[in-house]
Amino acid sequence: MKPAPTVSVAGPPQDANCSPPGGSEAAKAASVGVHNAASAVVLRAPEYVRAIAPYVGGKPIDEVARELDLDPLSIIKLASNENPRGPSPKVLAAIARAAAEITRYPDGNGFALKAALSSRLGVPPEQIVLGNGSNDVLELVAQAFLTPGDHAVYSQYAFIVYPLATQARGAIGIEVPARDYGHDLAAMRAAITPRTRLVFIANPNNPTGSWVAADAVEAFVASVPRDVVVVLDEAYNEFLDASEQAASTAWVSCYPNLVVSHTFSKAHGLAALRIGYGVMDATVADLLNRVRQPFNVNSLAQAAALAALDDVEYVEESRRLNRDGMRQLEAGLRALAVRSLPSHGNFILIEVDDAPAIYQSLLRQGVIVRPVGNYNLPAWLRVTVGAPAENDRFLAALAAARASHSGSDARAD
Image (cartoon, rainbow, N blue to C red; front, side, top):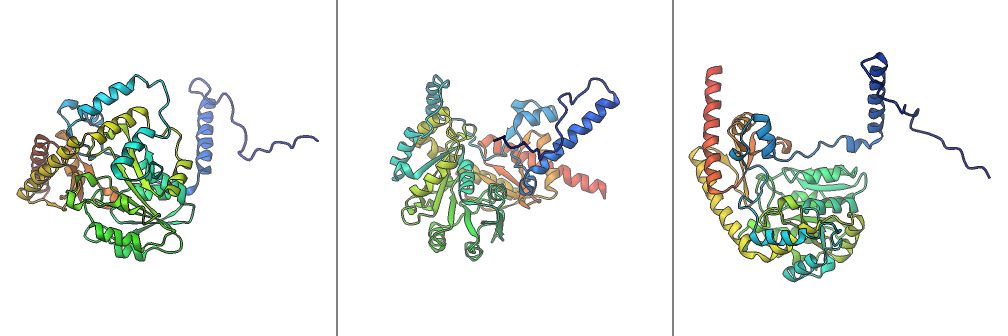
């Protein structure tokens, strides 16, 4: 039997010599042809992928230095909710030890870290999934449970990764209007339909800093149908007072549709290493492990997380410094008559006149904060709680930016 003929559905073959030398008409024509071919390739991607607005993080210090010709050492970054203290000495020592083995692949199962987390949290290791940051855990849940046309419910002003992860699967995001810039759990429960597969809750919420008491969150989880996964994102949990922290990982034994995600990027100070984890029913963890990358958490990150988990004093001191820094910022903002929202994280959201102009003025002064127009909060800026000197410098720069902006308005009039 002759083999079936190969049929191309991709259009005519590309010319191997697609860039003739020189500035000839042939070269220009080839360039147009390459551009058209690239456009054809892009159009093969699903429309819901092409419609995604890429995630934009806080500006890196080096980028601001290049763009504005500033000394990188003169710039402070209060844009990405990072820990301003620098890494724990125990973490640095663990990384140095682990670095000797970087020629080898990491433990794809994360045995040692899962064992330590299991002991700390009181859950079996098979209920823990490690991620390349907690964002990875959020993406894995979406990958495992969402298909085109499914619904995912989340709050207005909630973490922007929720709609991104939803849209990337061709699912439909159901954004529920916020209440006082936070989650309206009753409205979110009413938004659940037979098409709903996922619900995302950020507690505390980024970027608004809102927080919902543990009893209200658990009551919501208890009310959700058991075939709908609830993702409780607790990336900023360690900044809460002990009385505010929920025993949420223990809830998993009662609610097998609950996934609780945590990160080592914030209070533990490991943002650059990208490591987080999720706690969930073992059957759900099994699904996530089927779709995650085999070595999604590198060896240095695993070693650092182990050391960070053991360094309780570092986290406690980070919480104390954050609380003091938040009071410092709140007092300074009150003195400047700048409105801010109450925050339970390591950041504060402030409302200013002409936020884009104030943001640019702060950049020129070497202070990086975060515009949140992509959250439909165009009049607001998010400011990470920094070290005391950084907080003072931000407040002074903000005062100068507002004075300059007011002067510009007066001159324009």
